[in-house]
Length: 279
Image (cartoon, rainbow, N blue to C red; front, side):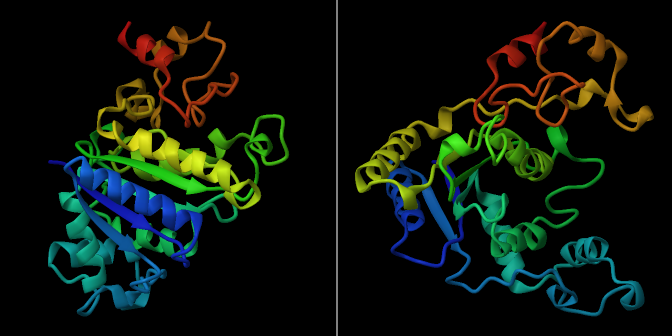
């Protein structure tokens, strides 16, 4: 059996977001998964990363460094109980679904960002030595599942909101992949507040079908660590630059070598890139 953690952030139980969360719980449980739901608004999860997250005195109160102090507190089992509860859920999860926050200002709501800031502590979720493909969570999967306030047509390279792939890069690469997760393609519910009930039902049905085979999906592809040279500050190795010199598109949204941003790099697995990596 697979263990799934759903980190859920929406204020209303009558929302489309709540319906999508309920579908996920229903389908995943029916397929034999155990499902934990962290309903962040329901538990009034604290969004701010502060000294109160440590239950005993800190090492340097005059120059408080949250990352270093919470690392020490994690090692000593001195983090606040709301953080340790979430870390326990995350530790046993095979799949984490960040479901289904409405996109706020091209990112996640503050309460979701607070979960990321406070639960993914240094030492527990990442370290400078253990990140990206070597990250602590390399045996786990994660994905974003969210609604937008704008129609899909507004999130393209030629549209007013820009390319959704670029919007997702900091979340999927900078947070999930950085911690080692295998990142599944996002489930994006485009503008449910501005479409018909029938269209909303179609989106939920698509999600229901996808959930049935979610565990067997191929993850998104990110440039592997061995493409980069530590001695030069993790720049692409010269041989990798040469290898991809004739390609029309760059390696990834954030590593594009001055070329075109690869199409759907953050929306769907890039089979061409996967093939290139094997050659």
